[in-house]
Image (cartoon, rainbow, N blue to C red):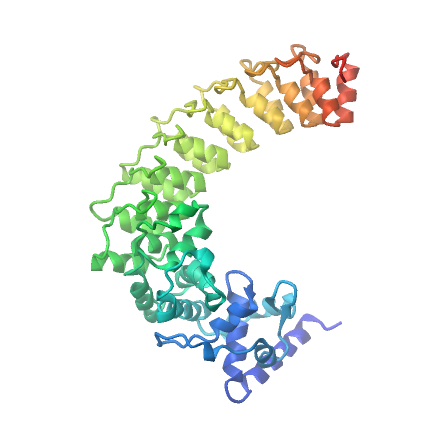
Length: 468
């Protein structure tokens, strides 16, 4: 077996041979290796070939420049391979990626180069002429999706003056760019009608989404867009920056006049709501410290930033919000779910403990369907959370919901053996309590094939309906 040092020597020697190739092979080989080793996701063969056909400084993309995959493989001296089934281009071995990571000087500023290539492609006449929805983009624009979604990620890592100018050129006309639609299609599950009747998503929105401080500042200086302008979903540049956690951009936007830090979008969600649900602690602190952001403002679903953070399991954000006197720890949303219910539903034990540490909290508060945090924890089979909740005096271990189903019924239905054992250990829990349809915990266990749970219930003299 070749050891690490010898393998490094092999890679070093191969790279020197690639650089020594005549004609265009040296450039093709090294650029292909740069893309495969530094791309934000695995590239398909046609994407890589299109990337290598882009001429920096040209506004025209020539299909005649696209190299064949066999030429690329040859130019890379066997250091790349193509997965025939998925048509994905990969490095020949994971140790080659490790070698590149250990020798960052092999490629000179790879991310800035890749950003320039992506932006040159997006600014080309051929791409600008594409006005069709994303679903209709043809193979002639196979590299388009990657450029649209990831140019900003490369630019944020390394931004040259050339890349900045190319970004400004693209973003000055970003209302109708096909690249915008492709970016948002990846960012969120927007409805199909959005691409049929396009509404504004400015260049400032886009730069804020990517978090490129220099580009955001430049766009503000040239005054292309309103700094607090709403996009198709009612979201401002600040809203996108907070959602994606870009503190530098947030500070720039909040430092300018005319920005409302509490402006809701069409869903009623504020920048703080988006930051809280995404778990961006630094952004949450900035919004609260700068003032103007309401820490307990509900959205159209009645959910507060605390509710969003609790359901996503962001314990540190929950702690930050709970430090604010305005925050109602027990505030229910439109369906009656409290932050504690959301934490129980998704199994966030740390968040639950934090919430239960608050004085004004009802650990047994049901939603409009009569479902309590304990019922949600039992339903999800969260043994630790069930134990924690049962330590609270106000928690009724046998409390039925509006359908008459108890926490034990839900645990039995979904085969949560550990939870069933815990609940059966409580004197107040009825092992054979029927719901509104006459179903007992045993009948649910039997119906769903949970034999071990059924045996536990039978040992407690649980009764199944005669139909079982």
